[in-house]
Length: 440
Ligand code: PXG
Image (cartoon, rainbow, N blue to C red; front, side, top):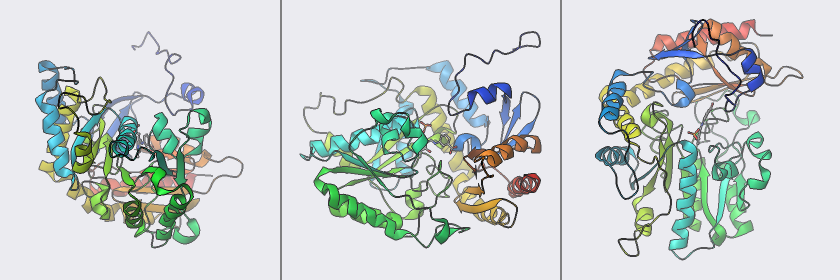
C-alpha cells in the first residue's frame, strides 16, 4: 500500500473475526518490537496476550530473526518424508529434554490444531496396535479448546465452534463437565480448592460406555481460550488415576501452557501430573514460524515400532512437518529461553500479575478474576441485552490507551510476554483500571 493506492480489504476472509465490522474499522499492525506492536496509524500498544499466547520472548527477538535468516539462505525446504535435516533432530532433542519423563518422542506438525488431530490419531492407533481396536471413544471437556480440525472441534467444548458443523463432528465423543463455578471459586487466586470431585464424572462416563470402548481423554491443564479456567487442586491427579485404572490414555493439550506460560516447562510439571501425550505449538517458535507437535511417552512410540523395519509405522504427516524455518525458529527460541532464564522469569512475574489483577476486584463491572502462571482473566458483567459489548469496547479503547487486549464474550485475557518488566505489568493493569472506570 502507498498513499495513492488504498488497501483493498474485500478479498481477505479473516479468521475468528467479525469481518464486516472489522472492515468498517480496520486495525492493522505495521511492526513489532519486544513487548510492543505498532499499528499503521502510529498507535503503539503493549502486547498483553503475547500475540495469541505465542510470543513470550517478544517480537523480532534478534537471535530468532538471525537464526531464520541464516536458515532460509542455506536450506529453505527439504522433503520431510524418508528424508530430514539436522535441525529437526536437534529440536526434537531439545523438546524431549524439557518434557516430563518418560515423554521423549516428538512428532512435528504446523499448528496446535494439527498437533491435536495427530495426538488423537496416535491414541486410536496405539490401542489398535495393542489389540484393543474397540477403544475408539474420545473424551473431551466442556469449554475445552483444541483447535479447529475436525478431531479438535469434536473433542472441544465451545458450542459456537461446533454447532454450525454438527454433521462433521466425530460421533464417538463424550465430554467431561467444565470446572468453572462462580459460586465456589469467584476471585480465587491460583488453583481453586473446590472442584476435584468433577473428575469423578469420568468414572460415570466409563461406567456408561465401558472402558473397553474408550481410547483417550484430552484436556488442557489450564483452559486458555475459555478464559483462564484453572484446574481445581487435585482434579488432574484424579483424572490421571481414573485413566490408569481403565487403561485410557491421558492427553494434555499444552498448546498454551507449554514452554513456560505456567512458570514451568509444561503444565504437567507445574501441576505434578504426567500425561501419556502432550500437544504443543505456539511459544515453541515464539510464534515466528507456524509450528506444533506431539510428545509421546516412549512406550507409546515403541508400540508403533513393530513390523518390518522398512515399513512406515504411522501413516500420518504433513508436507511441512519439521520445516527447516520452523526448526530454526524453535531451536533459537528454546536456546534463548534457556540462556535468559525466561521460564524462571515467568514464574517470578506470576505473583506480580496476580497481585495487580486481583487489585481490580472492586472496580466497576468486574464479575470474576482468575490467574495461573503468567496468565489471568477478567470476566465482566455483561451489559443488559448486549452480551460481549463491554469487553469489545475495552478492546477498542485499549488501543487508544496503549494496550492490546484479547476478549472472548465478556472475558478479557492477559498473558504478557516473559520479557515484560514488573512496571509494564503494573502499567497494563493501571490502564485496564482506567478503562473499567470509563466503561458504561
Ligand atoms: N489447543 C489449544 C489448547 C489452543 O489454545 C489450539 C489447540 C489450536 O492451535 P492453532 O495453532 O491451530 O490455532 C489452541 C489455540 C485465545 C486464542 O484468544 C487461543 C488459541 C488460538 C487463538 C486465540 O485464547 N488457541
